[in-house]
Image (cartoon, rainbow, N blue to C red; front, side):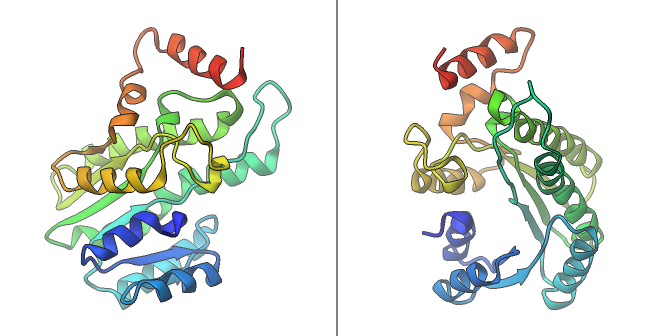
Length: 232
């Protein structure tokens, strides 16, 4: 299974028409060749002009499109106690937060014209329990969670439902296949199962303790997790 497009492959196998996107043309072609019937479009989520043009291309080429799955994300370790790396800051915020907002904005008019449509935003448990060495990433996921809540509210009287997938740490290249993280295949299988329910928040069991943490004393658990990760 291609880890980058694992959920897309799972949805494709269930009979959905899936169009994947990304900047790496070779990887896109490799994925659609392995999944006959799947389509692909090149997209640079960091480029506002490209987001608009690709959205228009999707509307023209796939008029039945009724689901936007915002799954793009990059993670680069950072140190909030030192001078911020401007490139890491801008790329992470642009990809993880501005990208999903811009993509939804570009497609919303089309989605609202459908009898039933969905925006699915992928956040992270790190939006609820941030890690110190991934402060920027964690902050973007917390912000996307907040945006998802307001987006869901403002669209509640339309045909567009807004869902959120908040994964736990999953064994992927993004975190160097951390053996303590949830294996990819069980994560995808459980996520697909929960997507089939009527929930607005798609959470696997392993994510629930982190999702439930925010509250008056949320810093206690955040500190415990970071102490464990740093070996203190």
